[in-house]
Each structure stands twice: as structure tokens, then as C-alpha cells.
Length: 182
Image (cartoon, rainbow, N blue to C red; front, side, top):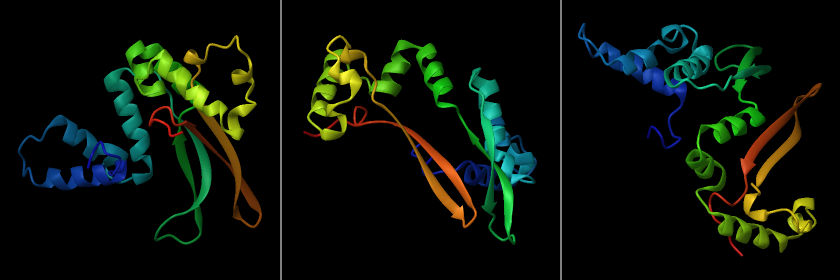
């Protein structure tokens, strides 16, 4: 469950707090205590994810900084909307950090461990599709396709209330990480 994308920070923190109760005065592992302490021991659940980012940053010396954007959201069991600060990472800082970490990590994260020839093959495949056929990087024969990373950044507006619209950004890597079909 954990590590497979099926556990949330809040769920893990809540489970950790419940597990601490089973120790009955004994000494629980430090990691369990740390997870249970997120969000001021559950008193401020909206801060749990922020606390985890800070804890991991200090633990592993991460240089990435999370930023927060305030959003008006419906909160369960509360009337009306509340301002919730949603944490996010800046894409260019994230990619820079991955590139600085190691060649192995960059290869794993950005190309799925594929080599130059496999990356070029991916771009040759893309040239056959109308969406990519006239991409400037693919049209220039001087561009080394074995060094191109298929990063996709998408922005779309979404109306949440009749008088407000939010822009939603997503960032991802196209089929190179999962393979591709002809």
C-alpha cells in the first residue's frame, strides 16, 4: 500500500497516531512518532503535508522548496468554503534538482532509464503523429534527438464558481517513461 500511491499523507499520519496508542508507554520507533506528529499531532490536519515536506527536506537535505497557493475550497463537514493552502513544487526547480542529483537519477526520472538510441527512436515515432510532426525541435536536423526530453506542460482554465475561474497546470513526461506504441 505505502509506496504504491494508495496511501495519503493524512491517512498515514492518522494510522501512525492510532498505532502509537498501542505502545502503552513503551518506546515506539522515531519514524512512527514523526509521522504521528504531522499537523501538530493531528490538531491542524491541513498542515500535515507541509510538515512532511519539511521533515523529509531536513532528513535528506533536499533543496527543493514547496510553495503554496491559496484556494477557496469546500471543506468536508464545514459550511461554505475555506481558504486552503495547496503546496506545490515549481517545475523548473524540480527538473533542475533532479539534474543536479546524479546522472543515474536524471536518467531514471526523466527518460525511464532509456539510452540515447532508444530516445531517438521515441522521437522518430512521434514524428509520425500529427500532434508532433511540425514540432520545431523535430524539424531541425541539428537538434540531437537522443538528448531531447519529452516534457509536457499543460494549462487549462476551470470554472469553480459562477464568478471565479482558476488556471490548472499539469506537468508530465510523455510515453518515454512507459514505452510507446506504433
